[in-house]
Image (tube, rainbow, N blue to C red; front, side):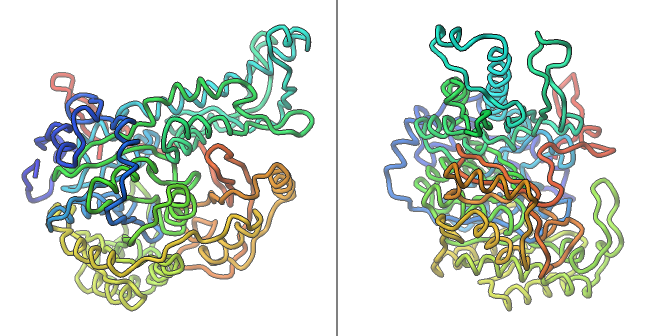
Length: 587
């Protein structure tokens, strides 16, 4: 282990800064990835060269493929990344060669609520500060590519309003006649900033471009990020970038990045970003950290390419899908696995006493505020009442045909009696096993029992396949997910959504999978509804197409693609010592 364990457990950043981190080239070599196969970004992080990824993808996968998902979380999170890292370490502890594959976090939530996303305690990805901040610049590359396209659209609108058809013909171009009221492409920024959600551009006269309404999304909600996560090589990336639909012209026909001539330049900006990043766990297992699409407003999984490589150089690959099984896991199978052709051998459902108490009717959990005593003292009744949420998530995995293990992420305020209630209910509901994990305090040794349970589950035999055929209509796919995964009785659509569905179907996008955008804090569309609701009406309030990424995404409820900051954001507790360069406040 690269850090000595202490009790009481220090802060996450103190642990990370105490760690004696091995050069990443040495760690990679242990997996058969040589120095010539990587581009180093300093001593402790690197990118895997595309020449290696292309060569290794020709080999047969040999690893067991494990996805870590969760029950419906509290706003504090239930330790899914900590469990993902801990399971990877636990597999190493029992003698297996394991790799973690996870998303790069957005700096919006890092500075907003979370303070970081590298795991926690003695189950972290290091170097932790690099992981949580710029890493190798991939998100900046995504933002640059996306915003170049935004600038290209407005430039085309501006020049077409000023010059004749013959002028464009002399340039070797033709007018696109873009409808300024049907431009679907916003700008992006990797920060939480609610004031940018809706805005007017072109203010100040004709020389400043067309006056129109637009807005900003957070960078990880960009279709470019989704494309990066799903592309397997530069050719695939270039094709997908060229398919991005940006809006409609005045005749109602769609126009793309290819039509405005920006697709090639966008791909140039992403030529390094497509190479997977590698870091390591605190116990020196390899960790791929590549791509970062949000799970409530995008497909919420790390890159296909990283997983294709990892499954060929290890015994076990442990990946993580965003939020609960209704969100990240459904999209993991129906979008990511459908694209890669790799289906999971087993899944881990992370559950906590705290979250189940919330689903059992416990007081509201609010970031930045102290937990109510119901969460810090034994309350078996609340835990028992909340078990329907766990049973529902296990039922979702069963519908997909995936053997499941429940990881009860242990907190110091839990009691053994509360944890045993969860364990017994999980096994009764069909889990292969349910174990309490203590890797936050103990590292891989604290997840050894989980590792053995996952080893057993991976041998059961998975029959996992996508939940619906692509031949279904857009509405039929939406309603299948809403009924069978979320528990809705029926789905409603606004008149505008009905029109868009007809438009998308007419353009041929009805054969794409669905990427539902909804709250992560409920199985329904309403974040206030906890537990396992049934028989509710699921409203579709908007629908969009991501033709390059290859999915249609309906929006349900109040979903913002640009988050805002709270009254006391995480950045308030962050600082740097100018004398030493030591960072404080990340977690």
